[in-house]
Image (cartoon, rainbow, N blue to C red; front, side, top):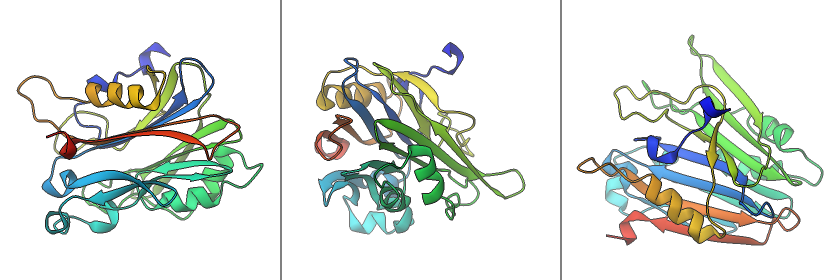
Length: 244
């Protein structure tokens, strides 16, 4: 497991990332959603709490229109009485709709994502990453492009262990051209903090740049939720544009 353990600080440019795990006290599940961006359109975004979830919105409509709006504006996290859904695109709604009472996280993800492909942003073909909490259990998914152009859909159980999370991201971490997309299984990460605010601050700080390097951070959101009360959440959002 140590070979798969990742520190957020080691990821120079992960794109968007999802972490699902449990707080150190073991009593609450944790979701982290983070956005990093290189282009002006990717940087021109923020996370807001509204309409039953956490949404990605533009900070500058004119700049945002230079990018692919459908890939830049979407619900990142959605809350329901049956669980929580999270993703890097509009597929979050389909995942939420599959979180019916008694549904397991991996079957819910498989049903929700059966018709979704990787993002149409050639030549990178960014993966679609998704996750959910349901019935006290968690799951993650990566939908990416195969070597022959086919769609590869992978689903993973994410065991909720105190102080530990599982991470998937759109890119592997290096700031390179072309960007290397995420491969393999979810990585293990350590989770610190006893509240959503503390954990969000730790994640935001960890994603910061090395001295003299470019700061790719856009926003971080953290959700704490008790397994028996999925619609009662503790949320902290950090938007970089609000800190400058």
